Length: 104
Length: 220
Image (tube, rainbow over all chains, first blue to last red):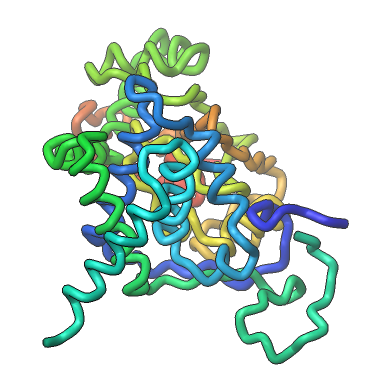
């Protein structure tokens, strides 16, 4: 039987891990960005589009990435799809941020 | 993706073995942090939203806590008419009681635990949760382990939370979706008739409104 990567119901899995992860600024910002962009008033995309983007991540990425890491990739996919940002703009920005971070 | 196919190239450490137990990483990579910053700065530069919008959204999200759900539960325990309205149509009943706007919240249903039937909520597909009344879901709720197992072996999963229910209590696992969320109305503990609504609120835990635990003094 085939099933989509996110369709976990009934799959084998280990014990529940109870450690609460610290909620980071990263988590908060990604969560807020997703909510603002998916807000019906702005209409940039819907929650369903967001889920489609998260659920279409390659299987290895889905499990390797943390929860909000999946979300940030989904946001990237959707803002490019919707034409809010271009792939080029994003790549330039990422390159600029990387060179900023590199020690002199 | 096939759940059954085998990866012939065992050298790929990044392949997820579909027969291995599901689990996920927790650390945020620098790549993810960089991507978040790039998106945020560009979207603010382009006036898609402002830094103030982002801050207000974070504040709104953080303001939602299980205390809200507890207020709803305590009122339902003490006011039979309110409980009937809550179970029939949860959103207006919650909006009226708490004075919050649930216009943008997906459908919300409150499921009642009784001595004969216990409910536990989950979201096997992602992380849908009644955030409007319980806040941010705990990490374990979003974990592959909880999502995968609670629908197949709820009693075993509840036992890991220290929750043992008599065998004759039916357990219903309620799977949430992006469009429909659930909150559990836990069983009212015995001998709490003399407590005020405020005192009752203090007894009600987040986990009892998810259904992974029962309140101390619950009688089956």
